Length: 343
Image (tube, rainbow, N blue to C red):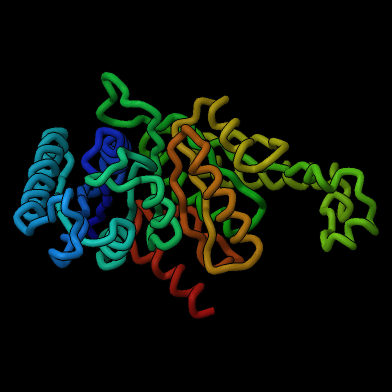
């Protein structure tokens, strides 16, 4: 099946900074890029209720905005076509987040949504940060988020991935990101950095007795098992996962960090000058999925490194490494969601 990367744009230069990543992934996977612009529905207000100092929105103005959006997307599509990337352009009406999710869900070809996390605000531009978080909660396919801080001069036309960070917590949910990371790493000979975070005790719990913890309704995890035992377990776990990937010719490193997960993942990615973070986010509920979702949401607000978020499906006994939702049929990701929904 032909694959498609959906790239929502709001007309701002900031939103376009996701394009080098879309180009790189399209070349690696042989995918088509579909540029999407969502225009809000025209306002309909009774003349007597309309403030006198604000001109009413007329249908012709709305039609003009749609025309401008089509012209804008056509210009970008031409540039991508000149780089050898098959590109389409679509203009839809409605709520931006809902339209993006619906468009991705109705096309069996869509394997990835790639978008910036914030752009310009104002009447004519939707806030990408808010839209990105809404899309994260409902997207049926992996979501690539790029958080631009300023418009770069001489920005590269194609992103290059040399180091890809994959956070793992020991669960099969988190491991579902490995297939996606491997699919991106192979074509570009990138190295994977597998990272586990051992959380520090919450500050308010330090020095709290077992009785005090019980009264607070909290069981301090550092009292359930010796910390050194947990450190050794995570190290063995990381080495096991690294060995599986190395057996297939992937360059892999491992790192165990200590602290708050989102902050430490961001710090490791920055220190290692990583080009991409690939991690699973929440699935259909349960504590493990809640943890993953919470970390993913925090990370998307603080990380400067682009993040590819994989919506974790039902936990499985055997992991299907090497079957990527980006490089494989998009139905794989949907089957995971359907399985989780019916369990």
